Image 1 (cartoon, helix red, strand yellow):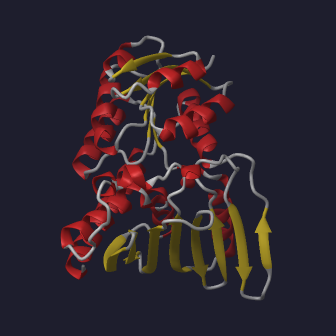
Image 2 (tube, one colour; image 1 turned 120 degrees about the vertical axis):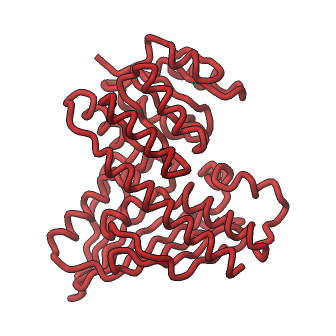
Length: 343
């Protein structure tokens, strides 16, 4: 029996990511309901899956043909919709990142899932990418301590990738240009991008450097982006993101430097379904190893993980989900404050 999914949200992420992914997992999931917030886009998306469509969340949550709720709405709505799905007695929840925009809201949402024993998966697809498991295994086996971490992200605002920044920086996108010399604008850009885009990779950073300590530097970058340096578990971490007005394909890379080698994990653009990230290891003795890509990407893997939680009754790592939020919010708050001062 497949699990019946109701999708809250009808934006580009649903159309280009989750519906195609769920279509590839027809042995595990069937989309039965799609709800929008009044845009009317749910009708066309629901038709692709032979599903029902509605506006708002009430009809979807009341639908007895929905067992699993996929929350793909704007981040500020996530926590309340998790609570509503729990109250409706749904069997499991998939929630796009982040769970919530504040620690308090995240705690309410996760604790409700814990109390009801409802599996909750957060869509941190890079963490679920098979390539990250490969890289993590290498780092554990090599035994070399992590010396530094860096995440580099360059996304040209190109329709091929649905311009992810349009959702992350919506309050700023309507302006003809960002005046990053204004402290409130600089701080807003840094916080929005950390909580809305860097959230892809912060769980990976936390996997290797779990204890956030302090921000060292933070600046907003033109035309829209940020550069942030921080210390976590004694490890220096540099995170640089920029949205370019044009140019080459996206660059999305996390680099881990140890006492013995360097590990690069290069993620493909989000909307292309090109399989897993690539992993390359450059050893101190000059050996250069590139691992084969896995045919599945992190989107497939995260949905498979949810199916496994439902079917096996395995325990959910609720505390890990909350720690991801606490780490991100602490980093974002400190970085935004410093970016506002240095604007």
